Length: 139
Image (cartoon, rainbow, N blue to C red):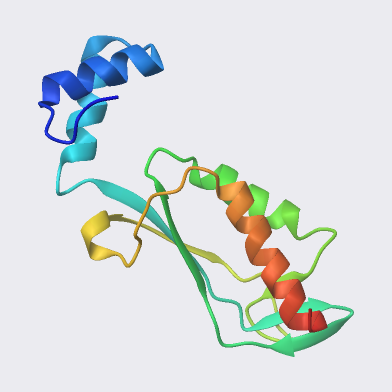
């Protein structure tokens, strides 16, 4: 484990060893992550309605930050498929409703409210749907 006051070279060496990547790639990753301009993928789900047989209007949002290398289309596909047999998060209740969109932007971490950067969007989406089910069914 590298000390908190370690040099970039020491951090890169530890990173390279731990993740078994080439030195040049390790330097690029570490330098990017240490930059104050390091961007993350900020994702917001803000449905207007939760539906599963019954429905309820909601005014809330779920927000999280993920590594910028995550494939956005894979995340969107997982979000839609996760709702197939569960509650549906819609933009509104009633006519003209469609699935609530994932609002996604690349932004420097310092411009978000996130205290950490996640890697597992599937677990987060499942927790959002669990919370939505609890809201809808009073659990």
